[in-house]
Image 1 (cartoon, one colour):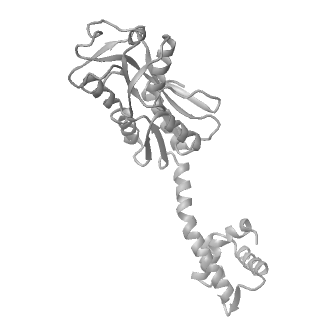
Image 2: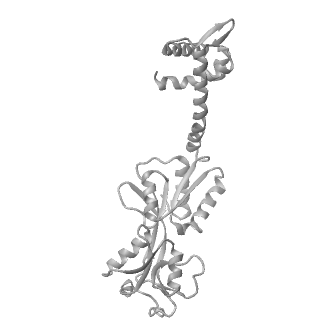
Length: 297
């Protein structure tokens, strides 16, 4: 039996099990009575046994018809939640947006972005995925998330990215460090220093590796962390120096922030898969995020 042919007839079977009256069933499902009768006859032919018999002005389902109607009811019960999800996904006011982003953006940037969007679209649901840059990009490629907010944005023909904001990079040193009194610091000045950084897979680690390589030296990492605030704490404890961005809140005591020269920024981009159609709710949130950061498309 062809499942595609059977699928539209499930609602008819379910209605027929509840009310064994073809005319009323046809009205309930919004089909002409001859169509309902024809479908029932075709189902019997496909099964090789009748599924309905006449009983005066009414009809009765045979045992085979009753079993098939019960199966149709179970199938519709499983299908209806999925249909509701599809309907919501296609409605920009009821859909779901899955956003992947770096841990550091979970303090203020992403909460404010979501708050401002839900103020105008209160029924949109969000899935928020925090992780290291590479892990977020991997989830984007696998289809687990819709949009990625990472730094730096990925490069490749499969991606489309828009720069949304930039954070200046600085050098952080402990109080009393030889560089503390400098008005600005060059990356070359960090050669030979004990450096504290994030693990591989984090965007800031990639940036630090690339900047040291461009300055002509191999960095000497003494600690590799998973959180920027841990890096700050280790620097404040006098265990090394680091390339970071300005602290969102008051830095720990014993830490000095020094401008980097020439000025270098950490670029954050909103990224999605180029040839992957986005649901209406995701497209609407993407445009909101770009407008919020002053990006015109």
